[in-house]
Amino acid sequence: MPQEYKLILNHADEPGYTPDIECYLRHGGYDALKKAVALQPKDLPDGAKRSGPEQIRQEVMASGLRGRGGAGFSCGLKWSFVDRKSSKPIYLICNADESEPGTFKDRQIIYKDPHQLIEGVIISCFANDVHLAYIYIRGEMPDGAKLLNRALQEARAKNFLGKNILGTGYDLEMHVHRGAGAYICGEETGLIESLEGKRSYPRIKPPYFPAVLGLWMCPTIVNNVETLCNVKHIVAMGGAEFAKLGTPNNTGTRIVSLSGHVKKPGYYEIEIGKATIGELINDPAFGGGLRPGRSLKAIIPGGSSAKVFKAGEKFNIKGKEVDLLDLPYDFDTLIQAGSMSGSSAIIVMDDSTDIVEALANISEFYAHESCGQCTPCREGSLWMSKALHRLTHGEGRAQDADYLIKIADNIPGGRTICAFGEACSWPVQSFVAKFKDEFIAKGAADEKRHAKEVKGAGQARR
Amino acid sequence: MSFTVPANLEAGIDELISHYPVKRAASLMVLHALQEHFGWISQEAVEWTAKKLELQPINVYELVTFYPMLRQQPMGKYQIKVCRTLSCALGGAYELHKHFCEKLGLDARAHGPQTTKDGKFTVEFVECLASCGTAPVMMVNDEFHQGVSHAKADEIVGGCK
Image (cartoon, rainbow over all chains, first blue to last red; front, side, top):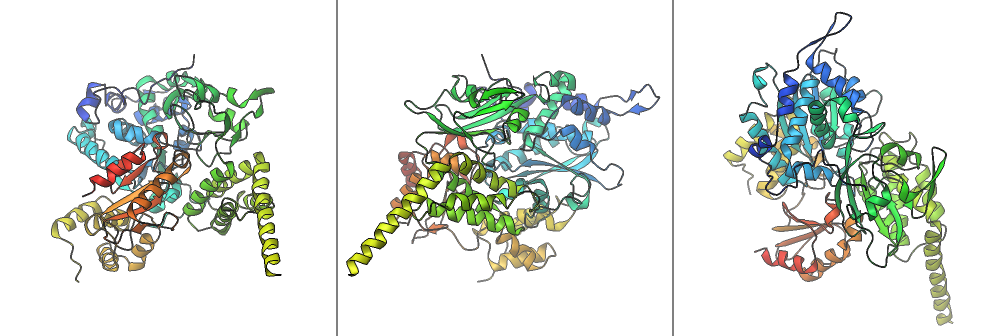
């Protein structure tokens, strides 16, 4: 039987659990930090010494932790790219700009267990010789920002933060920085620009890899909220032990945000790959199935930019034919199936959904949120949204389906600075390809009605 | 009308600026603080911020025109922000938005924020508020509401004095 495995959300929803530091300390809070800063240098066989921070970085690498924000990139590798010889300060930014439609996992951590995040950030900073860190929280979470500020004060008062942390000689300052309603700030280089006080225009890579040329052109680590929380648990249990959770190359747990047409929408923490998409939707432990009398139409498996799956689709996974509902929910399988687990947000649509309306909704989002730097994305996202607006307001044409595909095919693939180009194209490409009949039928019906009206008007004049 | 920033607000702003090794980085936080006090970001507020952070006014103005949460004109006393994005739309966000508009005498099909004549309410659609499991969701100023039925919506409006 599939079930939840609560590592990050172990206490968050317990009755009586509060976001203050006393409660966190009663539940073993900051023990991992104490363990981290007390690590003694290790002698290596070749006579060299491995410092405490280096040991933590090695544990994170061994844990197989992959970024929980969307890209699923190895956290250990990301940290290994940091330029440690530049003599410039190294900064760390926690990306708490949770904005990918469908996603609401970081909100749970920030609002219910802010100290877990702060402990994860402090340990990650210690491991990477960081002395100044920021938590970039989206502007629409004002209470979250207040909670985090209060938690930072409490941590400072207990000397988990500030000068000479726990008597180790290690100094760290951390501040909360609020965004102001722009989705693109979730893109790490856009986030850095925004934090610098500019418009959130993503930077081109190369040369602006944050690990080398990040915040104020200094080496910078940007990690998602959930990723940083995992670091705490890796230090507490050891990288090898952490790697036993989940499945090979998809280690640990993930908090899956389930929304749309299910009986029990919500967030469910699972061992990665230990539950299938079908179980997440239908099992009583998770979504509890569709509403009575409804059947499944489509699923967006990883936040609104992930390519859509059509009910009944079959995939070739490692030489075997697998039904959509039997796909294990992990990073690698979903990529093999042609989509992604992204920010681990599943949006379920039943047969009552107008698929053209659904895509129009998503495209309007991307047209609104494109930062406007790159022409293919700025214009393309708007053209697609306009065509879909037409199609959903009685002004469509049968050829709109092909028109949409043509635009969507010409935005991504290195034509834009950041991955937003992909993010706005993937839904259009996949929705239209998989539900083409519905797009054509809708446009054709509009054309037919218009032709009738024009003919009628002509006759009236005679 | 002259633009004056009260001393305690300025002290808070100075504290915010101290969080950054480069003053410009405080821009968004300063604008948030000013908007919280004045309700919107006027031309004077832009110029004041630029002077404070040793920038040109355009460096600040370009933020006000880019970030949707920063307001270029005064808004209603109660700003109702209804999430419009997919999961909330599937959960009835468009009907909810229409309900607010009809109740308050606004046009549900108009684009952008709309304010009632008495200046009490502004209603607008916003993009994903990151609480898709409890759709439809909305905010009234800084206050977050989830699973908003039409009855609950009426209650919320009734509670705005």
